[in-house]
Length: 196
Image 1: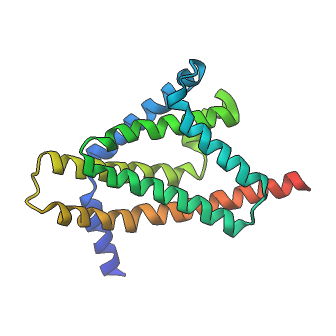
Image 2 (image 1 turned 45 degrees about the vertical axis):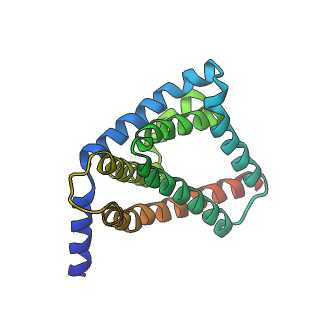
Image 3 (image 1 turned 120 degrees about the horizontal axis):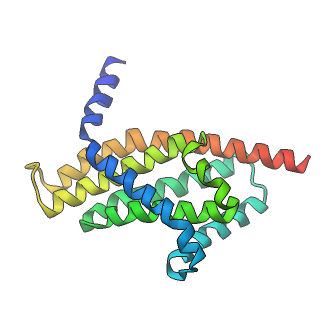
């Protein structure tokens, strides 16, 4: 137990909290801009989130059982955030992705619930786990990108990546696991209520 706590304590020190804060700011900027993008119908920015929305709607119409829904949610989120992390190898993309992630969430929320749903982006129980996971993954990508652009750690890129990789495994994935369980439970509960 003590060794596990020490591992987590060490991994916490590998998160650049300034970059975490920057991820939050860029994400929030994307959320704020989302409704304006929809209002102006800027197609190249709304195409991807609307495609995701349509895919999710199609999946939900099939009323998947809890476990299948959980696997879909968890795998989608884990893959998306892992790609955000890996984008650090490009140097600059994680900074763009932080904004686009907020934008995409905003557009999907606007499509589902209109302006009244925006508070739920930050205040629903799922978001309390899912958003920190996203911000950590994005901050890891930013750290990786900055290290590639201007090495300061004295490690090879592969060593630096592996030091961040364990943060992704032991922080991001557990948060996504818990949020996926909760989201799947909430959706299946609502579907059962609607069906009844």
